[in-house]
Length: 236
Ligand SMILES: C[S@@+](CC[C@H](N)C(=O)[O-])C[C@H]1O[C@@H](n2cnc3c(N)ncnc32)[C@H](O)[C@@H]1O
Image (cartoon, rainbow, N blue to C red; front, top):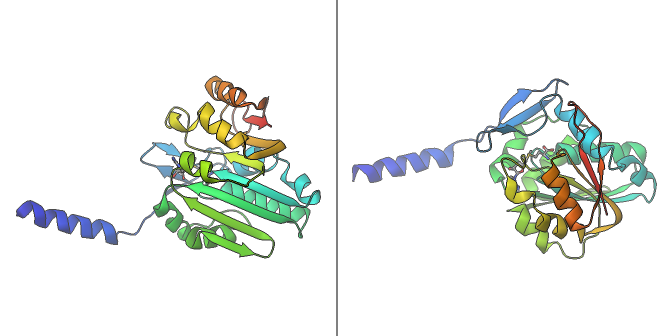
């Protein structure tokens, strides 16, 4: 009986609790979050904004695609705080304000998406990211964002009729989440990309690169931002 009362109170407390992402300032002055579950930061502590711009938007040639063909279809695999998508939107609209941008974001943490309302992401387009996090599907001007809640490994298989130009692959590390860095998942992404499409990821682990090659990608070094080792670009 006593246990039951305690359980009900505890449950009520948790359901009313407001989610607060633990945040820290990174070396470029932008904020990132910390995951207690995975014991890792959401971005590199050398610069969260810098990472989104230099490891994802720039090497995926977002500005070039915005100019020609003027339409970009992006898969944001592990959307998180939405920095990679925000960096891409800023870069694309700066290069061509009439560019069409379609983003599909995969994320399994609904509390995090709700918590984004309290975050001031360091991007001009962050208002769009927050709106998408609250409504899951938005279209404003030429920018459409669809967030699909659930396990990205499962959700990606439901994405029929997509030909992504660009994939931002950004789970927690292969050490913490080995189940997401598999050849099977990379194959499921590969078949949903157009020829010449680029997947960017921060990891240069040998196991990751082998899995990408196994899926059919051509693997290259990406820019070494904030550390000595390179990131990885995988080209279809
Ligand atoms: C390193 S953070 C991503 C940072 C993000 N790309 C950004 O720019 O802010 C990893 C994200 O993956 C999410 N995640 C972890 N496992 C997942 C899964 N199986 N399916 C979907 N999302 C997952 C976490 O909740 C977290 O938000």
